[in-house]
Amino acid sequence: MTEKLTKEEFRKRMLQASRERQEKEKRLEIDTFPKLILFGLGPIIAFGFFFGFLNYISIPTDERVTDKDLKERIENRPQYFHGYNCTKDCSGHEAGYNWAMKNNIMWKSECPNTSKSFNEGCKAWVEN
Image 1 (cartoon, one colour):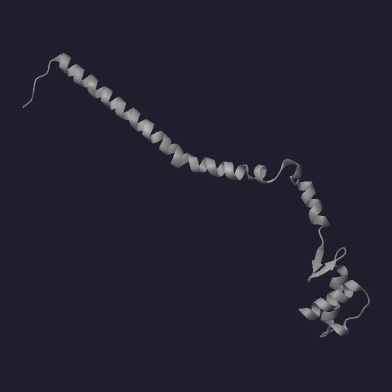
Image 2 (cartoon, rainbow, N blue to C red):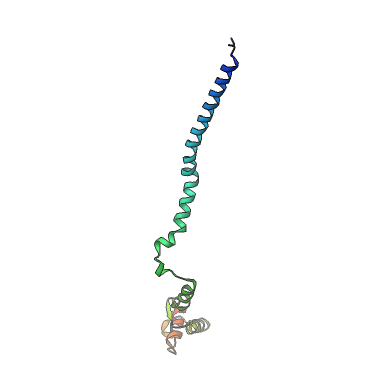
């Protein structure tokens, strides 16, 4: 049973249906946008803020390390040869280690006392 509508009634119903559809779309936009921000972009933004500003939060500006400072610290840090502290370039330790290896030194008492670094290098061979 189809009811017959006048042009005016048909136009009113179509206009009402159009308004209802627009309201539904607005509600959908309003409901979807916060979810998009919260679950879609929110974690990305939070991740960027956290890791992007971590340096500024954890290190005060007057204590920030520059590349030049870092290079100087690396160059001036103490060097070690098998646990023994080197004074400069560990060449004395390396020489004692190589000498002990070539001469099959087995006991620390066999290491010569020519210099402290040479002796420590020899001991390093025995300890390994």
